[in-house]
Amino acid sequence: MKRLFDFSVALIALMLFSPVMLITALLVRVKLGSPILFKQPRPGLHGKVFNMFKFRSMLDAFDETGIPLSDEQRLTRFGQVLRSTSLDELPGLWNVLKGDMSLVGPRPLLVEYLPLYNKEQARRHEVRPGITGWAQVNGRNSLSWSDKFKLDVWYVEHQSFWLDIKILLLTVKKVFIKEGVSAEDHVTMPPFRGEED
Image 1 (cartoon, helix red, strand yellow):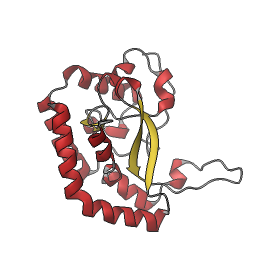
Image 2: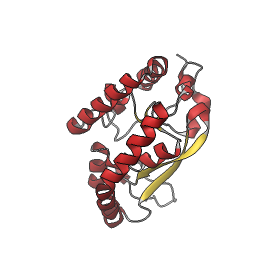
Image 3: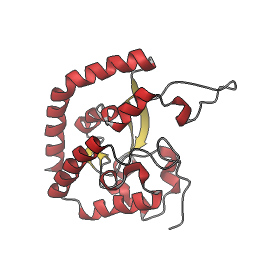
Image 4: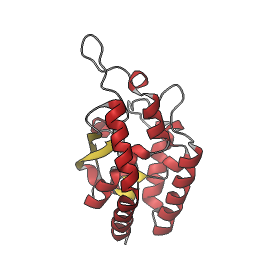
């Protein structure tokens, strides 16, 4: 039922938001250049790696040695708008159609974090990752990594159709009030370094 719901809603959303996605794509091309889409490998269900798609929100900028500049230096005002409105996440609906992701589930993180999880934190991969999730509607990037993982595992243990509906409705609310978009002193989330608890 969850997969059927995900596929149906993602297909309808892609059709409804296609004009918005087209305009966003054109703006990304003009303001940030090419490529328009950001593609990155992320671990999904049972840790299987897939390519996640988002609209690009950062400049390709490097220092004199060829090392990429920090997120703070590469994230433009336009990119901040994309992230705060979650417009950058719309291409992820394609991942939902393909079955890589669900509408609701723990957010897919970096592949390099996989060996850093303890046994409890790794349970987040018992379900498909989501475009939004329980952690996103309870603090998003303002949460500590420890709190975020606890919320992810709570979702794994309590997932239901009605909980997904609740999370989707809360996500719409969060997008409008633009709450928890950034962690304190960071434009996104500081890297996860692993922890023992």
